[in-house]
Length: 354
Image 1 (cartoon, rainbow, N blue to C red):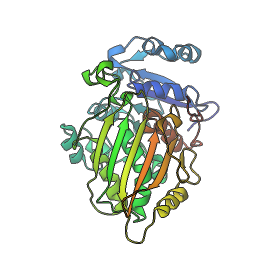
Image 2 (cartoon, helix red, strand yellow):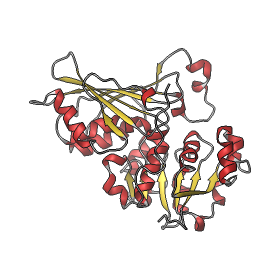
Image 3 (spheres, one colour):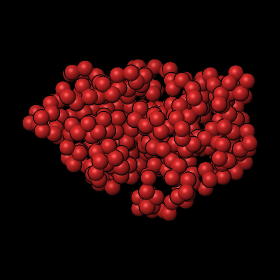
Image 4 (cartoon, rainbow, N blue to C red):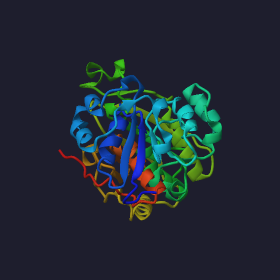
């Protein structure tokens, strides 16, 4: 789709949120993309630089369009649309896009194969069940062949991305007991979005850690859907998220039981084999512990494998930046595949440290 004379014309719907800002940061350094539309209904008429001062220089340099309402997008001039809208709002907007436009959704609106599962967990009817049938669940490294030919890709949530990268290959290979998975995950505050919420206020978050969505978080059925598919039967996982007083990052500590005849090194060998040639996923050596600071600002994911003190059990540790590999970076990675580009284009940023 992209060429020297015709870069990919990109629309970002929901550009005033954190994932929208990350898409702009990444795509303005993308050699094959040009941002032609930015929407943010409540901030329509403003420049992106006014909403996000850290992007002001980029806006001036690239002459990015002003923010508009979603219904003002000129679809005739768009090749790819990213949706960073609140859940329940992408269905109607995506359905308006011409069939030739490729759709990449960062919301949960198209993540569930069964529209009834979406309705159950999000409390509203699925607004585009016909379009849902086209959707590919876009965990890039594990669905590359499907993504290449897709028109609509549903990008995974940040917790599922961190959890499924280590779990799916092990479930597919039958190395772990998929009925006994425990996921203890921790996220930075940006995972809650940019909207004003009492639970995200500084005094509510700083100097403490707390669990939320206990036994009822909406990412649990998303994780279960992927593991059930990998393991060949329905499963339920024990998943508890926690909020950390940091801006970015997810660390998932995952506790698994080994199937008969399996050793911990078999898990590491399987993951190392699956991800050996991946540009963004790295399996660490024995004893190496991944940390969120090792991936901050990048599209990288690090996975550690540890033998537990309990017999026949192992601990998997996975870290990502929730706004990059857990959202906008993975979305750009999927766009590259959908448009026939090198997968790493626009994603060469190394982690920020310290």
